[in-house]
Image (cartoon, rainbow, N blue to C red; front, side, top):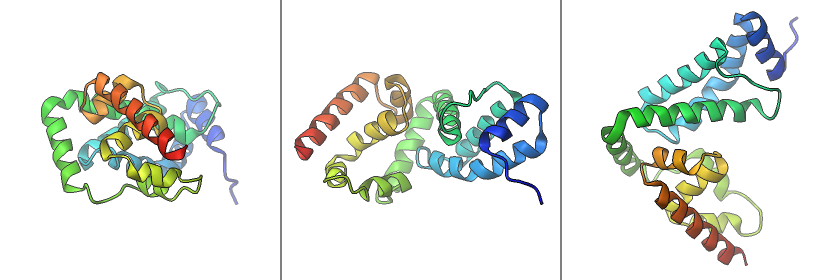
Length: 180
């Protein structure tokens, strides 16, 4: 019976030996999760699939190095979110238009993260978040939850960096007022 290796052990085996089995196990553990998260940000399944593949390719080739600090899922998300931004940048205005249309088509469907945020039981935070406009929630999600910079969030959301800053400020103000 084989013992289950930790994520760190798998990544060390991949980096040191190019261990294909370790890579396959890491992929099985995280590819479905990363794909689901990416689909919450990008409605184009083809782009999402490419980004997930590029993320794991960076791990395999060693261009993305894990430092045994923090959560592997978070580390993979950072790699993937940056790859997604790069993919969306390359698509230009046509990609932003496709994204906007996809958001309009699916605007009534809450993402998994939105459902989790709405179900939080920390005071009335859930209610305060639900009362924010979708635009303000999207900025908070990109900058606070996903940890993107203002510039990265701007590219991901298809809005100018100044708008990201303004919306983040408004969202924080509204949350403070709602929770006071």
